[in-house]
Length: 304
Image (cartoon, rainbow, N blue to C red; front, side):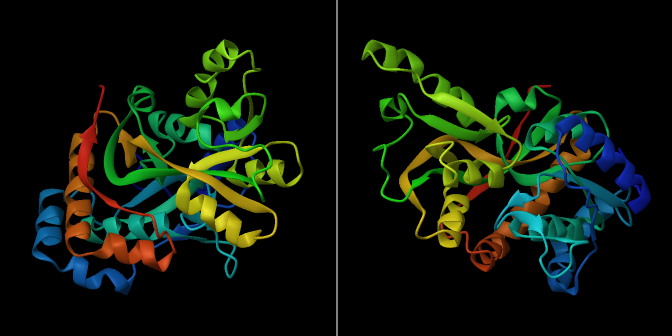
């Protein structure tokens, strides 16, 4: 694991990962432990976890994230050298509990798992849905939150979209590369054909912001993501965007760690359990206006 990376090394890793993903961002930022988490860090559970995992204490763990999801992770408006959002705070809380600092390598959404699996980063805390297909790419997941998907459309929902169903026939759906919704939307095609309709067209982008711009510019009819993310974009464009539907998907949001790093994975799971029991996860959800966030008991998803 890359536990002693400096900011200059992260800059090199970010450049390589961004070259792979085609992203334009080149920001590398570091967030250290905060006094905000001092009570958590001083808890019996976190003290014991540090004693059990001394190799984590005093290190820096690199988070591969896609910093384009408002409320979860974005570049700070006040300080472009740092990131902010629920996932940033959650990662820092886990780090405080286990004794390490966090820095970041920004990559395209589809490159997060390859970046960790290849050793260019240590973990993923970036609103990533935990699935077996993704785990097969070289990571284990520690799940921590339930998934409620929203469907973003133009104001008035002119295409009458009602869900991931035949209401999508003949429309264009904007999605991030690697989204779990991609195969779900593609699976609607046979039902469209049975009704004599055209299958939906999936238009792939590197970030949520690009997907939303596709709707605003008329190049797409809908976009699907966590309902909190959808509502944030509606708040930003109340006259232009609306929510068509909320769908509960059979997934949970998870933290990704490299396969084989069982001690690190299990320490994260224990830290998240302590964070949830103290109500910190819901406090962070409220701070970042993630009203539909719901804790999920930490569980391990591994296919290795």
